[in-house]
Figure 1 (cartoon, rainbow, N blue to C red):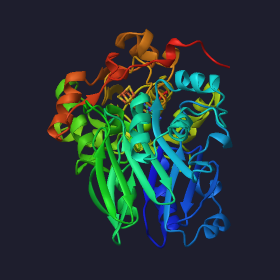
Figure 2 (tube, rainbow, N blue to C red):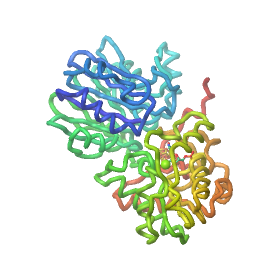
Figure 3 (cartoon, helix red, strand yellow):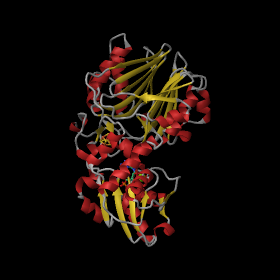
Amino acid sequence: CGVFGIWNHPNAAELTYMALHSLQHRGQEGAGIVCSNGENLFGARGMGLLPDAISQVQLDSLRGYRSAIGHVRYATTGASELSNVQPFLFKHSKGDLGLAHNGNLTNARQIRHALEEEGAIFQTSSDSEVLGHLLFKAKSPSFKSNLKAALNQIKGAFAYLVLQKDSLTATLDSHGVRPLMLGKVDGAYCVASESCALMAIGAEYIRDVEPGEILTFNDAGMEEDNYALETKHRMCSMEYVYFARPDSEFRHHSIYNVRKALGEQLAKEMNIDADIVIGVPDSSLQAAKGFSSYSGIPNEQGLLKNRYVGRTFITPDQKMRERAVRMKHAPIRDVVEGKRVIVIDDSIVRGTTSKYIVKALRSAGAKEVHMGISSPPLKHPCYYGIDVSTHAELIAAYQTVEEIRQEIEVDSLTYLSVEGMHGVYKQFESKGECDACFTGNYPIEIVDHLLPEEK
Ligand code: 5GP
Ligand code: SF4
Ligand code: MG
């Protein structure tokens, strides 16, 4: 998912809408905005891409409100339905509260069961809602101390934005798994999942929010605080590999350059000679460039992407996913015919994309097709908010690299090593990354998978 928030700007709703547009790649299932007029909160949300989710009429109705939060949704837990589209808007005698969450809580079901036992009624099936309940249940008159207590109860990955009539609060989990960036536009503070959203609205990108940090924005300015006794840096590796937009920056380093370096590292590890190297558009074009610059093998555009087809991974069933992949990528015959081709992709999840691409390149006349993957094999599900969800769907969870090579019918298959990947992130001043989907070393405890499955 993607989140954005802004405090005290005359065009809060419009800027939120524009920022969400730049975060659209982080979620296409639904979108919403909640605004404050200084007294009450008002919201608009809907299913689908931003222009379908929020109409011009709705946006106009929020004009003039000075603070806002917004969300684009990519479902990892909770059904794909309107009630789960964020920001959530809680109406309460203590004051309205808006909530937007990116990530995934790993003990939400446990907390929810306990709260339901005490009589709480949840409005959604989303894990994100529990924070709202914990905040209202708390007894202290200080919102900050209630928030700290609540944040110390929840486990998992989260970038949370909380909007109230007199403040906007942004907070990150103690491992900093999901990105969150601080910015400023026309004197107003704002926060966004990625810096590309700050650029889109003409904001200055100040810095990355730190693990365990709480930033509060109100009419007195910004207050910096933290809630966690112990913090670690465990930024999601897949944000670099695949999820974030290449023009976004983490710690002021562009994802574009990180992906290029991942490609260079892959070239160091993959000793295959070929005539051309091509990337699977769009997310692997930078890795292919890096591969080419290290290996000296020319980089060509061998595959064309139909930009009107969405992210195939997100399509719900396998048959349709295959069809979507075919619609999405077309080989350029003149480029690949008679050539030994190295094709670079960022990851293999189920293998749908790679299988089709290898077939398509061969039918366009490629003499040899070798595949390089700019991340290690995805063997374990993600519980922290990226949809590498079930074990059974991950081809590398139950097959060796050689078996996958045979299954996708490619001449050779090389994945980037885990060490090689971390080495690249270090070059970009990263202080540590989560790699659980590759290694199974989960940095944050997972409580809920021990509970029985719900319907
Ligand atoms: P597959 O076709 O193997 O199931 O999926 C891999 C392809 O889907 C890659 O080209 C990758 O860029 C793309 N992809 C789309 N969404 C995701 C996602 O959430 N995670 C990963 N790892 N890859 C994704
Ligand atoms: Fe990212 Fe993988 Fe960690 Fe999930 S398990 S947060 S996808 S690195
Ligand atoms: Mg791709």
